[in-house]
Image (cartoon, rainbow, N blue to C red; front, side, top):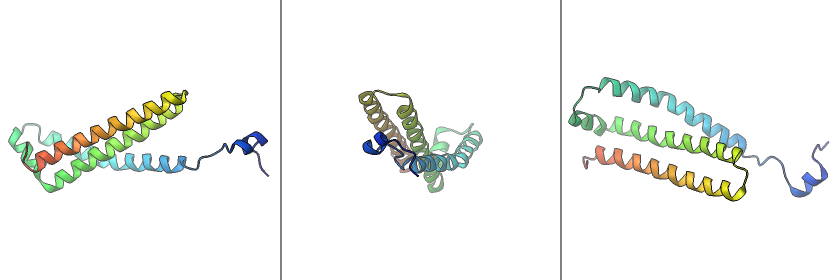
Length: 127
């Protein structure tokens, strides 16, 4: 039994079969962000009175560098997924939607790259 209309079958409209993949990635990135954000907030609170040099030394440790990189990449990826859904759901003009999606993806990629480079510069002693 097919519930789609004749016009729907002809146009091929229907589920794109990619919504569950997107939904799952958004949930997984949110789950990854919970412990990373808790670690980051508690770490910042414990280093609140430290000098600049002490913070640089802390960030330079490999464990902290990896966790900061994971935090930045998962946060920007999660933001990209969420903003993509908002744009796709609430912008109805196709040209505007495409332009906003491209601009958003470029901005998110730039922000993530900026964060990664900053962390690596501090970690490798170039800052």
